[in-house]
Image (cartoon, rainbow, N blue to C red):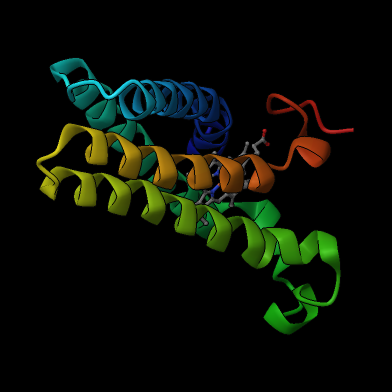
Length: 154
Ligand code: HEM
């Protein structure tokens, strides 16, 4: 198994860890915000693991973008040509840009929340940033093209 195939499988599977962590972080933030709860050590730990997994996923994605023969093929006739069809545009820019924005939202949301001392405001900030990021990630995952795991493609 070469490095590309390994990273492709890792990137495909890690989405579930990221989605699960993001959902847990959102539920915790909503409970904390709406139930007016303290920001706990457990909340902090979930956030730290979420950031780590998000950044690893983004890094693998960036490496894939550079080494993937599939992306090579998409960009074979230049960027302009790839922009002309919805399928190739998705891989040339939309997945990349959409996911980078989602990663920013998760990172900035947590950085902002860190500076807030009031627990309820902290929870609210995290809930808002994370929910928007989750919606964007769900939208930008190529469910219909690639299925649920590598090799599921219809
Ligand atoms: C951070 C959240 C991200 C998630 C949840 C995510 C998810 C996915 C999924 C599910 C696939 C399809 C894998 C399969 O074939 O089963 C994929 C493919 C891909 N992603 Fe991401 N991605 C993310 C970020 C990124 C970023 C930031 C980039 C940077 C450019 C990127 C680049 C790619 C590339 C190039 C492929 C196609 C690889 C290939 O098949 O050759 N991803 N991504």
